[in-house]
Length: 309
Image 1: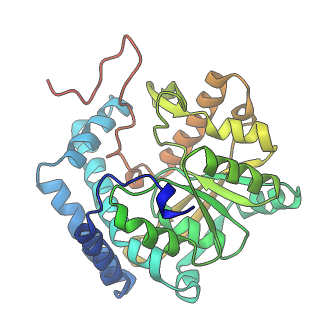
Image 2 (image 1 turned 60 degrees about the vertical axis):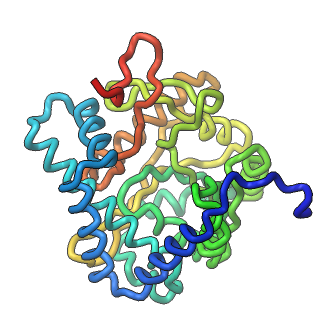
């Protein structure tokens, strides 16, 4: 595409991009132990200082687990923010480290038989990766071993996009933006027996999702996964990268997905999708990104939990 045909960007914010890239490079110079110390420091700041991440985390936990004691919810919220901070600091290793340095960090793969079975079926494989643990480590791991095509959402800071794309593609992955052109690229890749991964707990907007129960409250849930299954006949599995304590590394979990996710009935498909995400979150609730506005824009008859009283 020529430069003349490109749409103008809203803002460049080159200085912000330079700061972000500088921090990521700085984090990449640290050993994982020190990297996570800095990440926890970020998390403690998020817990101690009033901010939207803490507020949304507490609201989401109250909606999802109303029967938990407040002290238990608070402790879960604190741990979630610590893991959020570590996820930010881990962008350094995830985006910058070579394969020889990253590979030894994967200490165990649980459910690997599911992956082997799916690959033996000689069809595309779609991984659904909720925002749990070190989800940025999943892409480098998969792309270092298999042909992969990933959708990505362009960052808010335009000047970071090229850096991000090049970093995520360094082991051979192909990235496609989250638009119709990118989805067509993903469909073609899955039909060619590639592996892909998408984040199933993102709000896809009014046109890209329907409301389905998520921990007992309606959340706008993407229909993309079911449509990809219908169009490509791909296999589908859930995946999450557990962060082990004391900078010991990571444990990759691969879990099955319900067949109902391929249903042409959007409500049935999205309910099945959310049950799968719930099963993943229930294994590692403290590592889930509870600071995401998962319940925004609820359907008629439900109060927006984020609206300030």
